[in-house]
Length: 206
Image (cartoon, one colour):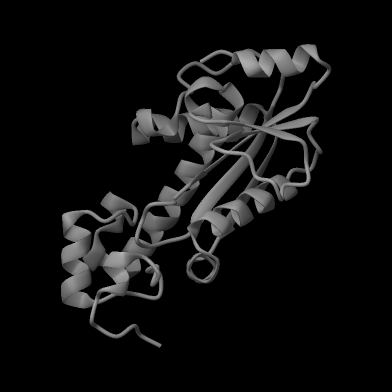
């Protein structure tokens, strides 16, 4: 992927430093939502293989993440916990994770590019692009970092809760995950506000 048309347009208008922002983890039944903001060097060549994280295999994503982290001017990561997801709802929790990711950047970008829809409460000037992770280089880079970060977290949690096979499904509602919910009940890392978890009759541990 090369720099996208929106990125080139903003650069030509004087926006030298663009932050691509994306989040992952809206749909799973367990685990946090994770966002990444990344400012890539406008004078450096783009990284071969960068694309929407959903279209890249896990091993290649990990390799690309290393290259992105090495070449990025700065990277910010933010997350919203399961408790925040249940308290705020997934939309507002995702917005919170995005705000935290942007806030972690050590350099204030000239402009922010978001995957999806605009966020009216976001203080910084931004443009939202539906499907931006497939058309904007900087958003795709953020998508890969966010996905790799969240996957690693869920694999780590899977060692403590092996029944749910999070090392394979990273918290999504696969048949194996739903079966484990029925037999073992939910954990503190499950989203109580999500239907399949809320419908589980087994009590949550304190």
